[in-house]
Amino acid sequence: MLKLMIGNRRFSSWSMRAWLLLRQLGIEFEAEVLAYVRDDWAATIKALHAAGTVPVLLADGFAVGDSLAIVETLAELFPDAGVWPADRLLRARARSLCAEMHSSFAAIREECSFDVFRDGAPRPLSARGNAQLGRIDAILSSADAREGFLCGRFCAADAFYTPLALRVLQYGLSVSPGAHAYIERVAALPAVRQWIAEAAQERDWPALSPGGRPYHRTVVCADDALRLARQWVGHWNARRLEAVLSMFGEDAVFVSPKAQNLIGQARVEGKAALRHYWTRALEKIGQIEFKLDTADWDAATSTLVVIYEANLAGQRSRAAERWVLDADGRIQYGEAYYGASV
Ligand SMILES: N[C@@H](CCC(=O)N[C@@H](CS)C(=O)NCC(=O)O)C(=O)O
Image (cartoon, rainbow, N blue to C red; front, top):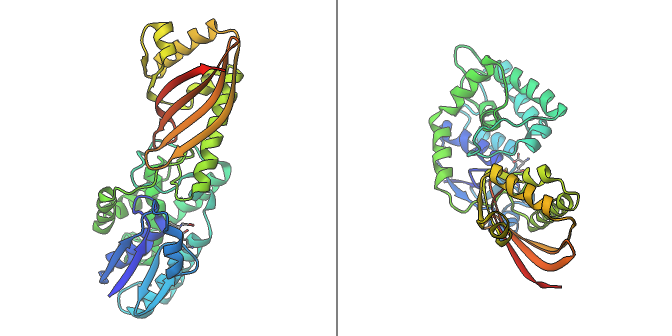
């Protein structure tokens, strides 16, 4: 029996490509999720295949890494399954498309990290991202009018472009009606529905970093946490209230004893109320100087704890803030704690 090692279904677009091809072509296999939160993730996958990425196909005592190599191996193992089209010209087109997917679209992949559960809120793209989206639009809208897929019947090319098609929905990207028709077709495939349903069953997701990308490397966690904390300190020191507010979600809740003193309630709910509270605080406090000590990120709970020294109008104390971040890396819950004078 074939076995496919995959990453978390929610985030792993390359895993989805191999899995979708196998499932859609009706090839029997079992899948094993190697959750990114595991400390031994890299070691485990490297023990199977030295490249250290998912997917990895385990077949008859050998391991094949890299989605493109997996496709070719499947075509060899199951020559009649329809991995590539039977027609020579269509086969050449399908191979070109897969190779292009495999080696291109870095800006879109970077700016719109695959997330099955992203809500479709539009994300503006860089100029490079937009140019790549134009090419993707042309590919998706070139689907065969009769069969509905990129090279006739569903084949490896469709498995390769489906995660890109889903990104268009996840990030509210604007494409032509022709591309949309293709996207709706692949999104409705039973195998795609199954992938999404199974993604919803997985509970061992890594938290999202402030940039919205999943964490599975501690060094990324620590770097991003520190960057966010530094930004926050810089914004306050420069009295950039709107920049501070941009770090909070629209429905953010913030709890602080200072809010209790200033506006009569410790719990401030929503951005408008936060703006009101901090505008009053800035009016009242002549001098603000924060110095960052440490920032600790807990990926399991998406929580960042920032320890800093606060100098508010000459009153210096050690202080801490605990922030719970949402999927887009904005603060959805914050709480301030003040220590003894220093
Ligand atoms: N070229 C590879 C790319 C695979 C890849 O980047 N997989 C991601 C998950 S979608 C991964 O394993 N990332 C982990 C890492 O790079 O440490 C392929 O086509 O399979």
